[in-house]
Length: 438
Image 1 (cartoon, helix red, strand yellow):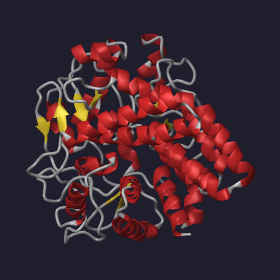
Image 2 (image 1 turned 120 degrees about the horizontal axis):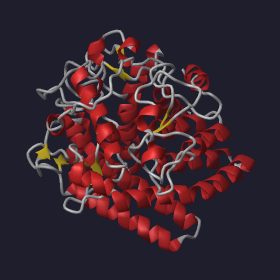
Image 3 (image 1 turned 135 degrees about the vertical axis):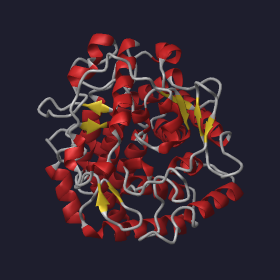
Image 4 (image 1 turned 60 degrees about the vertical axis):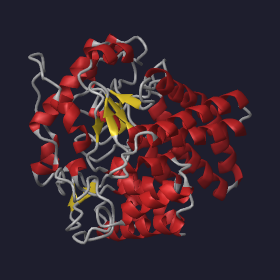
C-alpha cells in the first residue's frame, strides 16, 4: 500500500507541484498541497519541502495564500487563470504564477510541524536542511496568519469570514444550503462547460448545475469587489463565519507559535498564541447546546447553521477542550449518529450525519467519508491525548483504503470508492498513517 501511495504522488507530480488528482484537478490546491507535503515527507523530505515552497510562490503581497496556484502547462479546469484575472483586479496578487483570488483552510503550519517531526526522526543532514527550510518559510507563514487575523475575522462572532463555499474546502456541504439560497445569479455569468462530471461514474456524486452556477457567480462578485475583503463585506451575497476554518486556524497558530519560539521570535509567538486563544474561544462560543456540535453562522442574517455535518466537530480540532466537553464530543463522534451508525461498512464519520435530512451518501460533501478529514481528526485526537479513539479511526481508515484506489471519498454504507480516483491527498494521508504504524 505504501508503494502504491508513493507512486500516486510521484505520478501526480510535475516536478514542482503535486496535482490534486490526475485529471479532474490538474493544478495545486492550497490545503491539498499541505496534506500532500505531509505524505511526501515520509518518502522524500526534499520533495515535501518543495511542495510548500511552490505553493507559497503564489502568495500575494498582503499575505493571502490563494486556494489554487495554477500550473501553466495544464488546462481544462474552469474557472482557470483567464477567469480569475487576479493581477488585473488586485495589485496585491502575483502576476506569475497565476492564482485564484480566494483561500483554503490554513493547515500549512500543521504540515510544517509534521515535516519537522519526520526530519527529526531521520536526523543528520536532512534534519538540518529541514530546520533551515522551516526558518526560511516562517515569515511567509506568519504573513498568512496575519492576513487572516486582519482581513477575515468577523468582529461580531470572532469566526473567520468566508466569501465563497470553496474557501471552506467543503464546497457543497449542506452547512451552506441556507447562505447559498440567498445567492442570486446575475445575467453576467459567463458560459461554461462542466468537465468534472466526466471524471466520475455518476454525475450525482458531484455538485448540481444550480450549485455550480452559484459558485461561479461568487467568483464574479469577488472580481467586482477587486478581491478586497472590506468591499466584499459590503457587497458579497455569501458571507459566513466558519467554525471549522476557525478551529484549524487556532491549531495552526499554536504550532506556528511553537516554531516562532524555536526561532526566538518571542513577540511573534505571543501574537500567534493570542490568535489561537481568540479563535478557539470563538469556536467554543458557537457550540449548539441541543446537538453538542459547533455551528457556523450566516453573517448576513445572524442565523446559526445547525445542519449536522462533520464541521460540527471543530472543537476537537481547535484543541485545549475541557476534558468533560471533549469526552462528550468524542462519544458523539463514535456513536450511532456518526461513525458507529449500524448501516456503515466501516466505523468512520461521514461528511454529513446519516440521521440528517440532508444526508446523501454518494454526493461529495453531503455524506461520503473523506479519508483526509479522518486524518485531520486522528491528528487532533492524538494531540489532545485521545490516542485510543485516534487509533480506532486510523485502523478503520486503513481497512477502507485496502482497495488501493485512493479515492477522493467513499460511500459510507457500501464502501465504494467515489469521486476522483488516485487522489493525491488520500495517498498522502495513507503514507503518514503507515509511517505511524512503523
